[in-house]
Image (cartoon, rainbow, N blue to C red; front, side, top):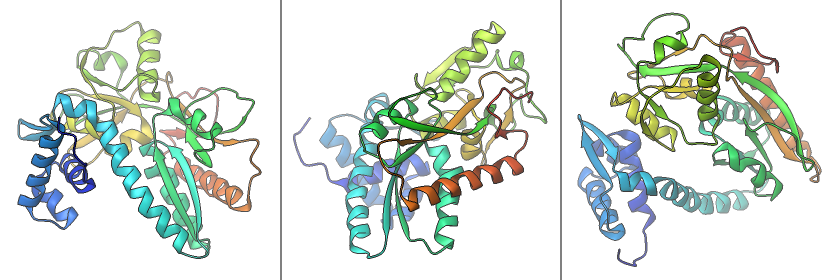
Length: 317
């Protein structure tokens, strides 16, 4: 590997190609030419000394080397972006910056609507989302790296205040037209013959799978393991396996060729909570955001009564 500077634009182009599943669409999204994006990816491969992208069945996929590097490249992209975002926030008078640790699905379904609702009240807030796996959240809140977190980590902690928000049930994500397509909940035994994509250990999705296996005395088979929801989605689209995810996560990636059904079980539902440090005095803005988050969750429950619940006890889904 050559020890050279790593230009952020190379990483941005590579990640855009994976996200858009196309060099042409990535170029359009980045306002670049397609040859420029191709050159960026090739240059990044040259700097890192490994191949990063391969095509399989017409689908753009990260190589084995890219799978290992992907979390670090995504963090690199976010850190570069945050420098400019923080600078803009500081430069704009009257704007309040707040840092939140959470998962991608909670940004999409809860935090983004809550922040929009807050802005409509005239409160100018600049959120910085740190999308991390659940097992890291408590440490980040304790260390003061974020102001609060939305997480499926549960348990008590003397340094943290934890407020239960909701539970969402387990769902199966599959390509449209799959043999398990249909209405209503899919029985666990119907899923067993099909290979799954394994989420990383320590996540709510992986814990959900383990609980279902134990409760029903079944052993799922796995075609692959991926650490990011973006990669899991790509693998399902390539028909390499199916996904078991919490309902809100399934909803985020469904559409445009993917569908999901709830699983006919009350086992393994994800319990999510709002976490903030006890030692930090809660500001008026903190309280306002917390209230908007709760209002957004209540609206979700009303719209999706069969998928999301405000009850902390097991639900007869």
